[in-house]
Figure (cartoon, rainbow, N blue to C red):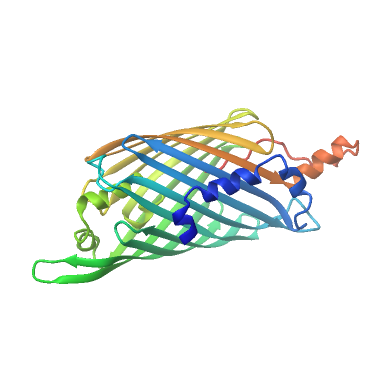
Length: 334
């Protein structure tokens, strides 16, 4: 983790390396139980010297006897955010916020799954850290998750009559998602979350400079540790084999003084081939203290052993059984 803090673009560089033209050769050598992978790198920029850099990977595992049968996913993501320490003063010193998360999802049977995830936040400028653990139960079209997290201020905090050495707050978050699949190419997802803090969130929030805490609103990956409630929805649409879009809107209430936070995203993606996907996005967020317009770019490289096996059979003139062929349309994802 220390290496990532010193070189926030390292993870992004690794992804760029893996998505080189040599990935096709690499795909032929990986273990047979690995049925696919998704590698992505992302970056974003907003006015006021606000930037993020990130990378993510997902590995799909399945049966060696049935390549279309995926039984588990393992995933990991990392995001580094840079922004002024005081969001109301663009000339203030820059601060870094490092977020990471990872876990495993296991398919119990068709439509049912269980997942376990760990996540973390490090902000050395504010001496603030968060560690979270989440368990997710999925039963299509519903998904329920519970997350327990601990946030800590590891610094001396001046008080009226004394000095407090650090502070802790514990968070219990309950989240429910519902996916409404309107067609094979269109899905609408609704999600809502509610958090219980101990001690009460305002007591913890008062220990941090209001302007410093407000700067967390620049980093959406960080907010899950400071939201009291959040709800909204996302519409995913695959228009053609080339173009897909995503539109989302969320309303949330945080432990920062300025509320509520309105956040919307508009994303358009281009599936140039079954492996290579690029998406461009625009994010609008607003609370009583500030409004941000953020431009986003993500590049994703994917490989699927089953689809490549089917295409390889067709190329060699070995027609696969009709029921084994799946459409080669890009997969819709949040």
